[in-house]
Image (cartoon, rainbow, N blue to C red; front, side):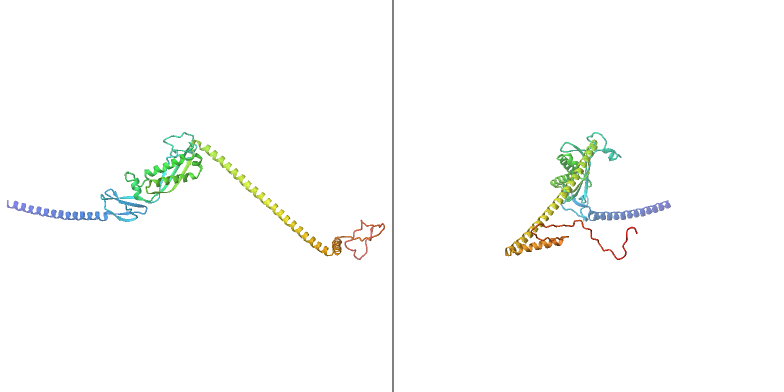
Length: 364
């Protein structure tokens, strides 16, 4: 009986030591948990509110749903963590928005050339299209390039009351872009929308004007016309018209080039004739003036010496004539008849005299 009691006492002592060890372990664990909780709370209200804004974005801070007007630029920033504050990241790089709502439906895997010449009717709801001002149909694909210049205004106008993703173009921008395309197309004819390079510029001006009027903090940078084509069943006819216009333009250009060349040659020839006439006129006038001065000089001398000047003129004229004459005949004056005989067929004068030596005789 005594042995059994001692064994029970020893068991109680062992059990008490285990409880103490367990209690001590729980006590240390509680302390560690308390320290961890305090550390997490401190981290939550200090470093937990730190965030980084990248170069391609801007950040807005909303405190209990109210957006602060301060726009956070690239770098490290701090705000009260959730649920007190929430960070709204707005893209700041150049963004694009594409629309193919006005393009025809393409079969998956089909080539554009195969679709371009298919003779099928337009299917509303499947094929996109535009109606021009002269009641024609065209297809076109577009791309808008824009940049968010005022993140606060953009967020408040486009996303404050919607659940849209900021990484995707807003529905307001898309609707405005497509409305501008529709308006410009409906205000012009098919030739303008299919051929003129000003069609793209007109759409860009219209969408820029509309977005500026909305005042949503967005700036339009460029509009690209990715493609345009007439109705698929009329592509060949439109191409035939374009080829005919191209040939006509080529012929007109050739005719204009020929006209310019011909006019230039005619003007050149005309100028040459006028220049020659002016030169002849100048030469003739100067020659006449020289002769007039010469005769006036002779007349003045004649008036001074009326008997000497005729003789001098006659002598000068006679010496010029005799200097160029081959044969000279001097005839004396006679009261009666005078006979003059001229040898017309004289023997030709040998060019050079014969040299010394015996002469050759015929027959020897």
